[in-house]
Structure formats: C-alpha cells, structure tokens
Length: 206
Image (cartoon, rainbow, N blue to C red; front, top):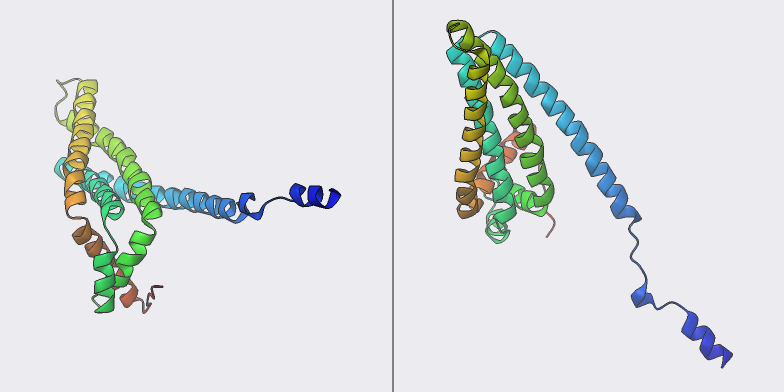
C-alpha cells in the first residue's frame, strides 16, 4: 500500500509546468532591443528632420513633413503585409534562388517582431516627429501671414497631419493584405541587396 501511495504522489511528467526561464529572458532581451532601437531611430529621425526643416523654405518644410508621413504609412504597410503573407511562395523562390526568397522566409518567421518594429517603432516615431514638424511648418506659415492667428494655423495643420496619416494607413491596410506577398518580397529584395552590398549571405533552415 505504501509503495502504491508513493508512486501516486510522484508528479506526472505530462502535467509538469513548462520551463519558461529561457522564454522570459528572450522576451526581456527583445524589449531592451526595441527600446534601444526606438531611442536610436527617434534620435536620428529627429536630428535630420530638424536640420532639414531649419534650412528649407516653407514649401521645402512642407515636403519634409509629407515625406515623414509617407514613411510612417510605408512601414505600417509592411507591418501589416508581413503578418498576412504566407511562406509557401517564398519557399518556391528560395528553391529557385530568386533574390529575396530566403529573406522573405526570414521576415515571415519573425513576423511578430518585424511588425512590431515597423508599426510600433518606426510608425509611432514618424507620427510623433510629424507632429513636431507640423508645429515648425505652422510657425513658418504664420510668419508669412501675420493677420491670421498662430493658434489657428497650428490647429489646422495638426488636424491635417493627423487626417492624412489616418487616411493613408486606412487606405493602405487592405492593399497590404491583398498584395502581401508582393510587398514582403519587395522588402526582402531590399534586404538581399543590402546584404549583397556588404558581402553577407543568409541561409534559411528548412
């Protein structure tokens, strides 16, 4: 009886809790990476946008503002596409050694992280910087028409920036879903060209 009782008290291997230490460490490393990446990208984007805005005319400043908005929409497009695309076409490309095939598989296997970088890091940074740029452009515009309230100019331009950003992302979302393979392949080819330029190769595990 005692032997049976001892056996019954032993934990069943099937009901053991999975070891999550490695997964937690990996998540912490990823969060630190995201933080450093966001800090670096934000600093670089802010520096160059301020330099350009301070040395251009009103039309040039408005062009910079539109470019920042477009960049945010573009990365949001990629972030949506990478979560909607399937690996199968890229396996075919990789087997035929089509440029970007292996890189496309890598993007899709890391879809969560890629989408986070594109939408949450670059997309949000572009949104914040476009707001700052809008304030600079509004000040430039107000200097040219002193009869109009500065607050009114800032309000109109900020609303315009927000509306353009939302419109662009909403319009591109369905395009990203419908053309996910094409969009991911285009991004993969950019990565392929970059690695080829620096003499790096990418091997994909089957």
